[in-house]
Image (cartoon, rainbow, N blue to C red; front, side, top):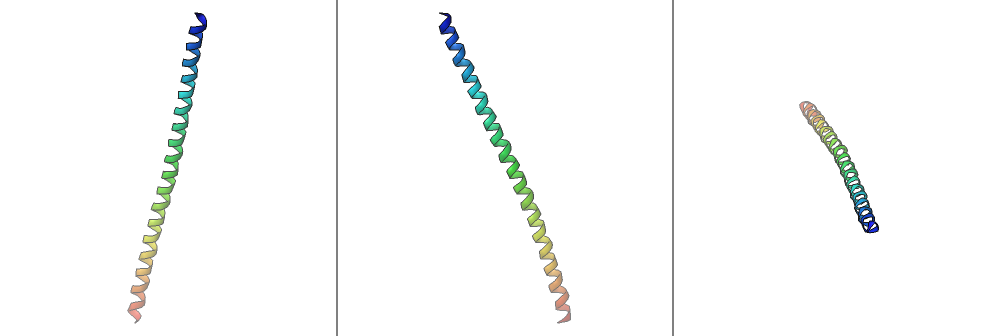
Amino acid sequence: MPSMVHHCWYLIRTGAIKLLTIDWLLAKTVVVTMTALKSYLIYEVASVKNHARMGSQIVAYVQSTSLYI
């Protein structure tokens, strides 16, 4: 009888360890994904701002050159 209880306890314990490992892996994946997404968004925002700045510089240049034409 004790062996049966011991066996059940072993299964519960390994199951819990497996669940914790899966939870940890999921959490790790979520963190990595969120970090990647955040850095991608920061990059995108910076690139959009950069494009906007370049666009306004081009417009300013065109306006300044068209004054001389």
